[in-house]
Length: 456
Ligand code: PFF
Image (cartoon, rainbow, N blue to C red; front, side, top):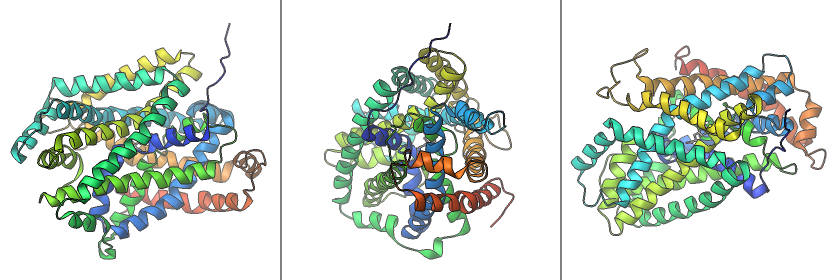
């Protein structure tokens, strides 16, 4: 006998906003966005990034919301219901796979963040020098046991929250933690911006230099918009399926994109003035976050408290983003495969942990599994490449094509206008123009260039 359970939804517009923003805000804001902006022409890059959000990000986000809320199903079930018996449902299966593959390496980096938070709390960074900070980062990533243990803790926390369900888990956590993240980041900003020489860092982030705006920079902006807004892997479809009936999905998409960009800029304003004030190199990626930040914060008054605040906010960002990633397979397994939410969470987290270990043990060439490579990439880089450069853009492109060419306009109008309660005709026209012509074209260019077929 099958028991039909009532499907959960978020309880208010505010809950929808914080959960969706929680998915968008993640590790991407804290190192990827500021670094790319600084390196690719500052203000000029920001301008391109905004265009990418407007012409690609928002239309795809809206499409995913539409698919989710109209069907009230997980990524696979949603597409099966929308286009029964067709192969469009493979977009959903691709999404479930992409979410898992991203988690294989995202949970590893999140493990380092949790570990750093712990180290900051116990005072491990007090008075460190650059050599010590570098050695500490090396020890953390090389492990081999400790990064695996922290990865396990991360996955246990995420799966534990998700087991509690949509309202008691995702909604409660994101509604509490997102405002806290905002407060912590503003505190770090105030400290960073009042340091001597902070202006250099602000200049690095916001100078407008169109000369640096190469084709590669434009592609980087497009890829970033995609990753930042958690698009192309069923995440926003799954969250959309929990949206309230009366949610204005146009404004939700816009508010989330703007707030996410604001958080990225605030993160840049906390990091770069500090880095410049201490005469450090604004180097790329995890190195910046994990080596420079402990060093610079440890050298200023109240440094250790700020350091704890900084890694706490980074841990919040990473965790709320992971909630949305892990929810994709959990919703699929529990709705399509008849598993309970709890068993689905345990199974998903176990798979992510076991395969994720491969990523954790191959971060560096000298890591335990660092010698195993595919096309010159270790597991960690391979998972990143397959998901970010292949599955996400293809997922996004297929969503755009399906929405633009295979869904009836009236159905979209009905859903996006909340059954005629809102006047959206003009906005829907803009949406269809973008999703039919502009978005797919831009995505094809990015995809071909990211796999090296198109060269600029
Ligand atoms: N948007 C997250 C970030 O910027 O860190 C990453 C992410 C989360 C990507 C969720 C994809 C996703 F489904």
